[in-house]
Length: 308
Image (cartoon, rainbow, N blue to C red):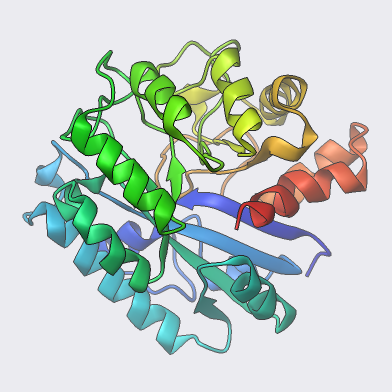
């Protein structure tokens, strides 16, 4: 075990456990509990995606993209309760990590799984969900997605307001630029981009422009470094990751940069990155390249923790 504390803002492991019928303890996914033992403390946000427009993945309803993987994750957490438990706020995260347990947090990635209904958010919060995007990869009743110019709808505004009242963090990853700016005019709390990179370095619609990065920081939120190679650039490696990190640090400031690897949600990782354990190699690489321990702690754990 290293002395590294890791708080990652986005993975799709819950879907992979369900889709591939794999256990959480040890599997062929990017994330499992054995791999997690590489860290002194670990908190992970598990996302539940709508997969809107991709129902060929599994013959099920949008709601079942939430309920079926969530059932599997709950069963796996219960089975391994000596290693992992659910958390939904900072005190629970801290308590679990101090006991040597992983803190598992829950997020919605595409509210189609709850029919984009603001009235469903209270039930989600009661189930422990603490984060939600407004879209995935398609426009919906709330807003336009990243490849769209559609802004926030009236229903989207109601969803956003209800989420903030319930202490559910709004995640702007996958959101259109128009809807992003609509949100920044409405927000009274920090917003985050859990798994998005820098448009200035890689011109992909899933990445954020510099003025968006600044706006997130100004709300008190964070931007999480995504490990998916198409969001980093051709032939991406640790050096490419560092370039995106340094750009985020320059634009956002040291208190607003975090990690959101998109592990188990992406099939092409940077050279040298195969699974969760390689965060330890990336930490060492950054340290060797002059990153102070205090800054590394901020990026790898503290900045996301403060949001909760």
